[in-house]
Length: 293
Image 1 (cartoon, one colour):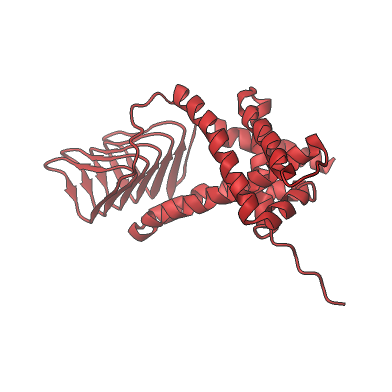
Image 2 (cartoon, rainbow, N blue to C red):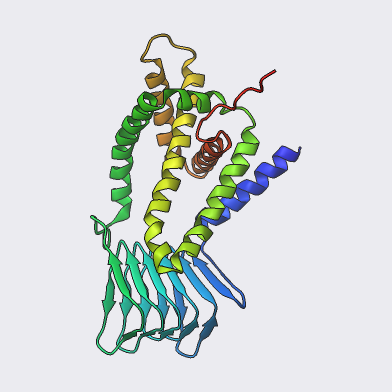
């Protein structure tokens, strides 16, 4: 009974976190997700401000830091601290005043004449410009390519670290609810960790490495889940190619899940969280040493 309540609560949290647009504000900070944040001329926000999957338009005043992730920061008013944008641009209008530094990762800083940026200006552009693209057909193409590429990379993991992948796949059904909880906790801490890094210039440039390490861990966990699912569906096959067949079957099943409305996404999210939890709980697939008797 407790497991059912735990699952219901966790799924509710995930549904809200991944699908809802919301804004939370208190005396010391403001966080907006899935929508634009508009600060009018007569508005004054005290504390740190963070926006994810939306733009920040500041015509008023922010007495603190501003971090925008997957969106642009448009400053026409005043920000007393640093301004950071990840996968987006910083546009400082003619009346903009930024008391700290302005730094954009996978974007650029556009400073108009008359604007003031007291600190440093830094831009770290990526190899791809995703602005203006239609992401619906792009997502379908990327998904098909991703199935092939991710299967190839997962197969490469089977060659490089076969023992670790096999250990994680075999231990996948063990303590699944504990691993699921660990995975959810890691996902929920991901965004606060990025925001904590984004408030400093040094931390800002560490964000790409942090994101890469995090998603590499997620990928490793999903590879183990795919292997476990494929083995469960096909049964025990013989031959050296058996693990790659398991992996292919599991990869196709995981690939199909997001195309199933609601339920498919919930199962996919569950698998992703459980896989991440397995990697962390098993210490990257390292078998625990047996006690010497």
